[in-house]
Amino acid sequence: RDVAPSRGLGDVYKRQEENVLNESMKRRVKALTVVLAICLITVFIRCQSNETPIQQLIVVVNGDSIEMVFVKGGTFMMGCTDEQGCDCEDNEKPARKESVSDFYIGKYEVTQRLWRAVMDTDSILPFNGGCEDCPMENVSWKNAQEFIGRLNAMTGKTFRLPTEAEWEYAARGGHKSKHYKYSGSNQVSEVAWYVGNSSGGQYGEAGTTRPVGLKKSNELGLYDMSGNVWEWCGDLYTKEYKQGGKSIHPGWPFEGTYLFFRRILRGGSWGGTAEGCRVSYIDYDIENYSDEYGGFRLVMEPESIK
Image (cartoon, rainbow, N blue to C red; front, side, top):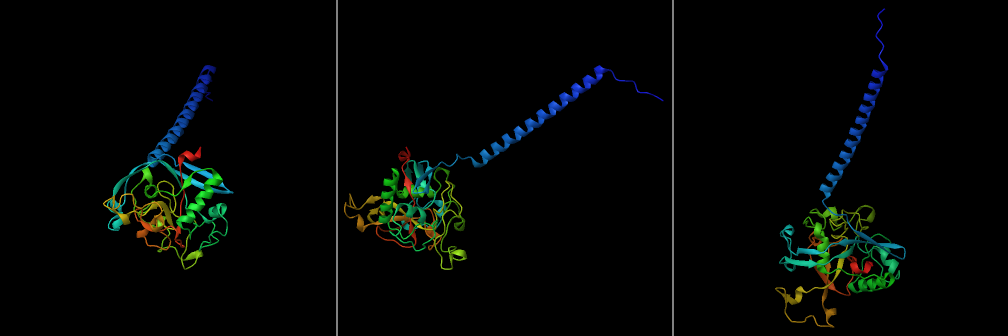
């Protein structure tokens, strides 16, 4: 019988060393492949987002949390811009350049839960009572100011209503704006509760407010800037006494006459049309007026977080 010649010990060790080297090389290649894949995924995600993370701040008051989103200031075109098409009202024209400084704005509209955490439970009764996560409505501009006064005293922060320019800048997505017609989309139903979708289901056939945050957010991570409830701004409605951007009467409105002028509301509501949910649409009413369509959202000065 033929017998294969035996291998020498040197050949055996050499082959074992080669196997070890091969296995080591395979492991290194595999590890590098995994690392490369992770790097590519990371780069892809960064390229896809091309955005800085959303900066948020939480303020706790009486066990409830107020979520605030940081808005980097900037310059933008306010009013009847191209994406609004032919829906613009006269008081939205002409589009004009406006600038705002940094500020924080509420991620959500002030809810019934937050209202109760700050105010007396029976101070105002919402029409859609018992929905703790729904926006607080039936709130006048004066009611909102009273709430803010108490909130500031409780927290030591400086909350206020947004200016009209701040509101529209935030609704448009700030420096991340993709120039949508509504706040976060060109399709109103994606981002807003309005007359076209606010009835039916578990909330009843009549239509009403809905819990905040159920719809898609806008570019800044803000919810319900379009629809749900109208939101009070701090500004007086000046279109009544200005022409061409200039005051008809210098110094007007005079101190003590504010009660006879109207305050600005923005954003549309659950009972309104899609047109009213546009980011440039302007509504207004007197300071003491309230109904089931109106609420508000908070703004906070950056300095007050210290």
